[in-house]
Length: 296
Ligand code: MN
Ligand code: MN
Image 1 (tube, rainbow, N blue to C red):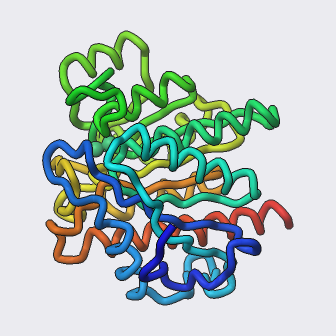
Image 2: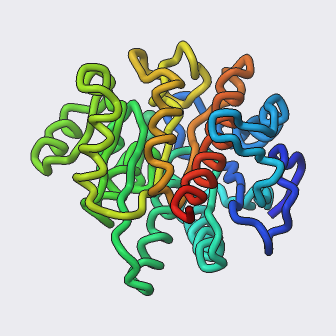
């Protein structure tokens, strides 16, 4: 790990931290716009824009113990980077902390999920579901010569578990859509969220996952390019930021880990990194608040 700017208010040491933020500056399989390797630091810088106090939750992040352990030293070879990341996430989980990964590209999510699954098998402590927010199905078996391409990440996750739902889907190849139909993969389009209502869809998704713990991955291209223009593969007709915030709010009581990937700062005038940083802050405040409710 090496460190430049830390995420705002990340003042706790690792030992006493509840949340562990870390960056993975890796974008070697990016297919259209590369540069997500620059996103962790862009989000860190953007994070200083915000107040420490979250009025919705009545939580001051200044009082929340979290740390930023810097960026993982990555390899240019995807499988090597994934091995390093897997070991890192496993450590964080073993230490009883909640990992928050700032990508980097979406391929990284697979080993974060895998680390949770390997721990669950060991401890047998309930079922874990995965919710992916993405414009894209990411169901290719392989792409550009590797199974670990960002366009394959949901396919890899589905090899680990059926407890998978994706939201915001509006793009994929015909083969991916055929595969999704054949396997009855649960995904929701932005239109279905609009028509049925976010709360209804989320309660359906939670029922379907039938679990008490959820890992959440946000590919920032799920958000409409009007709000989040700087992503690897921008796709029109997406969710708006308030919908994504609402998803985090509703899922908070279940969440055990989080990542936010695919921001490409070179295409940004700052707003995508700001939104990313804000969502990370919403995640932490939401989790702390829902734990306090459970304890009461
Ligand atoms: Mn993706
Ligand atoms: Mn995507």
